[in-house]
Length: 405
Image (cartoon, rainbow, N blue to C red):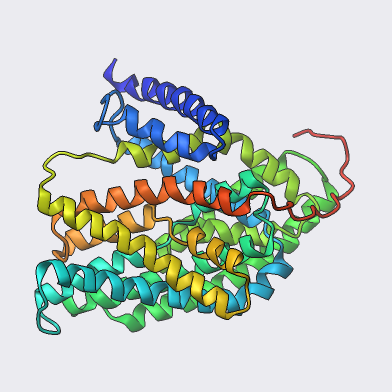
């Protein structure tokens, strides 16, 4: 019977996430906040009814991949190209400020040390954890609010994708001091290769899907093939180029976003994401949280760590947006939208643990950052968007009523 425990876990997560999502909605908060709290309650920190397992981790990974694929599908390519140069600048400053802020925070608490020493590298690594932005929660929130396709939403998404690539380069550079075999040039080359691969694969896939879409419009085979492309791109990004799988999933969405049936594909993806994979992803953030062994010193570090991580993203990205000509309110949206941390921060932390750049005790601090940023970001974004009109939806393409295999 133990082999079927995952069925019980899934049932608890789906029902509890839905209930707390509805409660959050009633309280005028985005549903994702309720889903994260549901995971926290079900997890080892409170009730202990559901534990983190390999199965749930994989389900969670699929969840964030589907969210990013959907985000790519709903992207307006013209807006993305317009925000490209601005997004690059926002992402660069959004990496540099947290990197410096995190390193200084660690040194202020545990003492300054010589450049290149082990203590110095630990401090830099803490700053590296803060560089990673998790766009999944922000994307879902903007989607709920109806502002995902807005100019600010496009800037946030573009910046977060670029931020992910820069963060990986920074991580490899830091590890290079610890492991001489790791070379920054290799990562730069891999990133360039991934971009080239995405362009070539994108051109071929787009025209192939365009042909299928024209010959078999509004058929279920199109979303099925689109999902396959999403998984292939996510796999290729991680396996062959060392880029996060969510970046590959987002690129797959971008490839298909100009198809006539792109909205139809997104609609079908939303069914699986909304009913199962999305709730598992957001609840898993709460499931990973444990507060055992918390000491006053660790509590002080965690408080400073979380505060620095949040404020440096808001300042770095928000101030850059303001310098680029955005209003104070829109600049605040950019800063807040970029302050969420999630799976990328966990990956970076686990890498630091494996190479000895991070003490296992501080992993709880990272979990706290993910929990707090994941809960506060949707709430603040909703307040910032309060009273604003949703961007006008583009005219839907003339779709045929048929829906067959």
